[in-house]
Image (cartoon, rainbow, N blue to C red; front, side):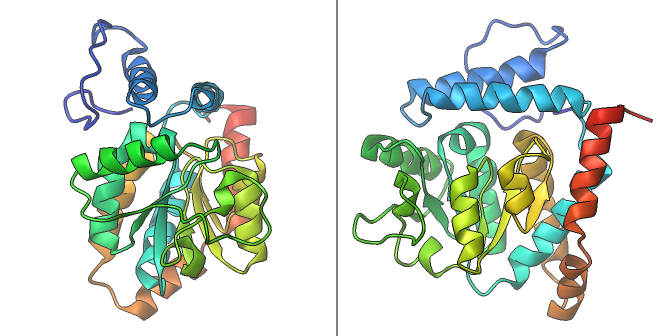
Amino acid sequence: MLDPETDPRPDTGSDVPESHPRYLSLKLRDAIVAGVDAGMTSVHGLIAHGRGEAFDYLLGEVTGPWATTAIEASAARLLTARHAVLSVNGNAAALVGAELVALSRVSGAPLEVNVFHTSADRERAIADGLRRHGAEEVLLPDADTVLPGLDSNRRFVHPRGILEADVIFVPLEDGDRCQALRQLGREVITVDLNPLSRTARTASMTIVDNVARALPLLVECVEALAGRSQSDLQEIWTSYDHAAILAQAEARIRNGAD
C-alpha cells in the first residue's frame, strides 16, 4: 500500500481520517474527483477508476511479482527505445501527474496528452496540470495529424510524438488505440489492473498493478537501470514473458494469496 506520509498526491481536502481502513483508496478516489473539478478528468473516468479498484481488491492491493517483473522490463524497454512517448489521459494526470513528469525526466520520453472523450479544454487542463508538476514541454494533439486505424478522438496525435514513436507508454489505456498501435508495429507498455482486458492482452508489456503504486517504482527502476549498457537492458526486456505475467496476475485474482 502507499504510505500516506510519502504519497505525492496533493491534499484534496478529504475529511477521511488516516485511521480509516480504506484511507488510501479513498484518497485516490478524492484525487480523481479533484481531477474532474479541475477540468482534467472526464466524469466517465470515475466509472473506469471504480472498475479498476475492484480488480485491485482481488489482487490484494499489493504490487506482486508479476508487476515488479513487468516494471523492470518496461524500464529497460523505455531506455532502449528509439523514440519513446508517455501518453497521458485525464485519470493518469489526476492520479500520477507528478510521477509521469518524473518518468519523462529520467527516461527522456516526452509527455503527450491524449484523451478518449473529445475536449480541447480538458486537453489543455491536463497539460497545465503537468506543467504545474514541473513539465517543461507537453505535446498536444494536432487536428491535422491522425493515427491510422482509429475513429475515436484518440486518433489525433502530435506529429513529433506518438505518430513517430516506436514505444508508447499508455497507463490506463483503452483497447482500441492499443490495438491500432500494435497493428502499426508499435510497442505498447500499459498499466492495467485487469489482466483479462483487451488492453492488457494486446499490449507488448502490461504492469498489472494500481498506477499509483506502479509509477513511483517505474521511475525508481529507470533511474537504477540508466547506467546499464544497451545490451544488458535488451537482455532484461527480451526475457519478459507477457503471457506468463498475465497468467500470474490472473491466478492471484482467481485463487487469492498463497
